[in-house]
Length: 132
View (spheres, rainbow, N blue to C red):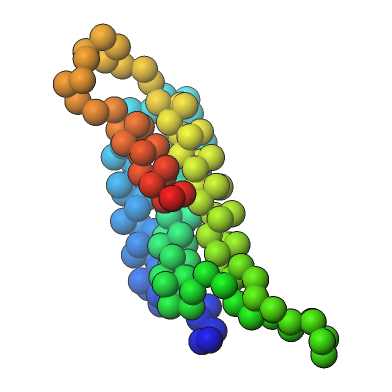
């Protein structure tokens, strides 16, 4: 099995992070100005996590979900791949960051019905899909 440690160049990775940061900034632009610094840091981290999740997903597609291991001369077998373990941790961290950002969104439009989908709910649905 081929060892793949990265898919994107640094330039590609930075472009993906920037694009995701801009997307998240639009969603969370109505945040309380008093929380702006914390929101900015969370958005930066979420954007990094999202880009890294994409890359890790591509690594898993190339290398599979299991890998062989050998501990000494007689102990060997198959285990969950390192990329899958990294992905699991990243998606959980990303979910927590997004949840934290969504919890900081101002509550607006109460009682407006289903005219427009809440951006925070859309984001949480997206994260839920990643976990599947």
